[in-house]
Length: 303
Image (tube, rainbow, N blue to C red; front, side, top):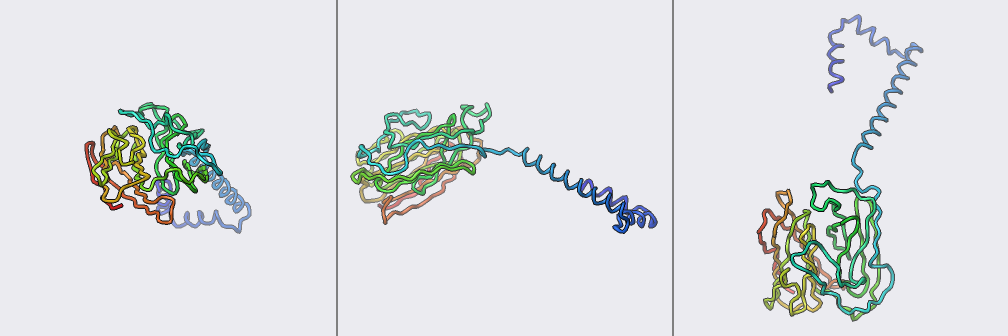
């Protein structure tokens, strides 16, 4: 607008005779002037294309060339030797998800090459500030990538399982079939994730018998347990129980703290019952968290 307005203003102040001459210069009946006008248009269009290309290449192409590799699980048919993989070794205070002592067949691991690095102001400057996306059997959650690598435990049940890792427009999917039918499966699974890096949100599950699974008591006597205590952002923290007792369960989230600049941290809680069967049911709840120390009852439900 700034380029065209002066021209329009000048044309309005020209005398009538000059206006006719100006219009006459671009008359297609004069071959030489018509050719000049055509060449001018071609040059202008060419410069426009160059400018557009420069604009496109000046934009940040985040993750366009990222190469995703999923090391575990492997695709195909398998029969795991371990009957139950619900308990993972964890520590408090935790720093991030760990897979110490976890069978390769009970974890999701891999790497993403050619990721952009975060600025030095971010805690752990080699960590990628934008998480990848992990999709397990249709449930989507953020996946933190550290130094181009990711690893987290997962209790896979018998039958068909799928794992997909996505970053920007790239993805890698693995499909496998667990043939060991006696292998424990999570008849009740609660998954907590959130949308902020360098933050700590905790999952609390109170069972019908009053037992409380949380980071301070991760494995409880009735068979339920929380896999890991994630204190560095995004989650997920997962409660699983292969033999849930009947009754009312309570789900709480506690915004423990962190250094997020977000006014509201949005948590996502997914409740899955009878996973991998014809009776499978999923419910998703979104929980806004505004300040550290905030404890919220997300949902009470009957199993």
